[in-house]
Length: 224
Ligand SMILES: [Zn+2]
Image 1: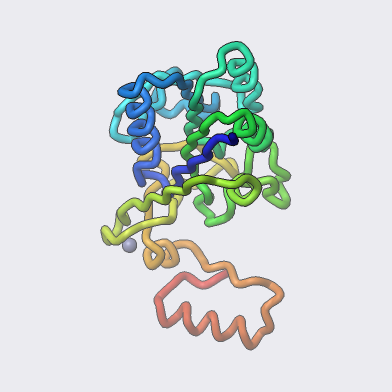
Image 2: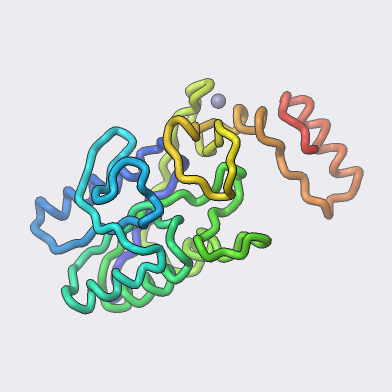
């Protein structure tokens, strides 16, 4: 029987890593065998632990972003459940690794950001810089998920439900790992006050103007 794939998604500060920690603790109480992984790139708080923004830690295996280590470990010691934190920082090979491990009946849990602070699908590490493909959408739509848990944060400006991550600092690279000094969670209203709504180029001038009117009405930043 194929294993279950469970995703914990949401913007930064939405508690998705805390959810992963909760699921890991559940394993410990039940005495199940499991392994926790995180990508090398995510060194925000600690190089060996999965650390939530609240400082809760669980031991993790820090591995290269190609993810092959998960397959190697599994061939040597086939645990029942596999946990992957911050999956968006891996290379897209992780999708194939997951597909293979699921077929062996293993359960896989992961946490990740589905979108960037520019509100685009989060590109995997090996993505084409021009197209941003492959990205998190390929993982979400490419493999059957048993459960997708979506977390919201609270808006740092108005405290409404927030599902956008916004970069406070000037980003010097497309994907920048950061914490509270670099990013904030914003609701749709506050996000669009600072980040322009993307109006597709192929829209006719008529339609574009209608959208601009709506933007002015909402007090949102206009597309440059
Ligand atoms: Zn807000």
